[in-house]
Image 1 (tube, rainbow, N blue to C red):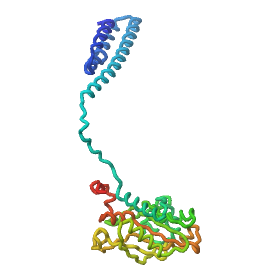
Image 2: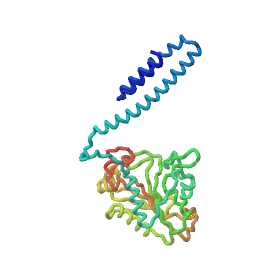
Image 3: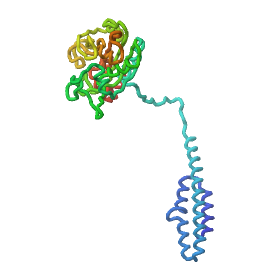
Image 4: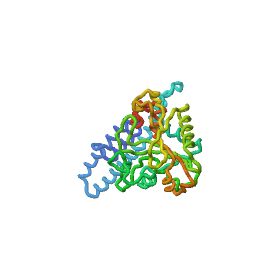
Length: 340
């Protein structure tokens, strides 16, 4: 078959094609590796150089034109086949749709937002602080001296030190002096965020957890103000009168200092893993801000006083939702998390 005969044959067959499968067979017959067009080149070897050049150009031009026609026809056939397939399907609009599973907030996020909401209603502003801190803000500004166990990475201080000398903050208290330097009293802020401590994990301890720090600085601030704010917050958060107790304690950044315990909501004071069988759960540390901390915040300790408190958001979530193991919040266990 010569080139002219091949062109006529291909044109006639191409006009009759109505399916993609037929077009595939056509392509293989004419344009495939063993197709008719390839076989035409076997005729070239018997011609003169000029005739070979001319016929070769004509064959290549024919092949390019035929490939273009095949591509256009393929698009048209595919479009028609899709339309036919779609028209053949019926849609029953009365059928109920499949339920799409959506994500939801972690209970720690729910707890944090609720705590922030209550404090905002009480006149506090929600602010933020850096998780990577310098030693001055994390320790020195809070009246924690050199040699204190909290500063020793290998002792019970449980501090993570970075190569550049900074630390992963051990409490959100590190932002206190940052804001005292910038703000003019009265100051009423809460500072929520993640903190880090190198310690063994158990039902009530994690190496990283969420904490919220509170700071109020003004003239004539007393322990009575402190107790009133904490009691109001706890009653609002737990939506009932909460039984608490204040125990004298020691923190370098407050004087006097207190630990605040509440009756365990998981076991109602009977004793469980969450409260270490004592019936009480330590929920926050608090006290009157030490004059040195006021001074480090560029304020006059003779004029201004304040109180500060810090509590673990994870611990508050345990008490609110009656969870006996803090590790569940960070486990990624969907069976647990889908309950909230």
